[in-house]
Amino acid sequence: MRVIALRSLKSFWEQNPSHLDAKEPALAWYRHALRADWASPAELKRDIRSASILKDGRTVFNIAGNKYRIVVWINYSYRVVYIRFIGTHAEYDRIDAQTI
Image (tube, rainbow, N blue to C red; front, side, top):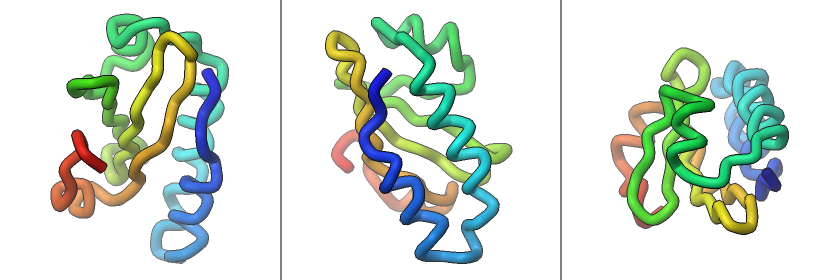
């Protein structure tokens, strides 16, 4: 998969030192996504059982023991993952994952 954009992940922990513990789990997720070849939500779910599949290509990943969440939009036919949000569980609760 092609993941757009690593910069979104980096800015999350660089702009707030209290989120520095998200760095390694986020990079591990990023590397996993780069190696993946998800052709459908079902394939993604088989690969990462903890992923939450939403409508219209949206998916939520829990990282760092569910302390942080990554929301992405996936274009399966082009194998592209667009990072839409990374934040704490509490920050995630304040957004609408379908529209962010």
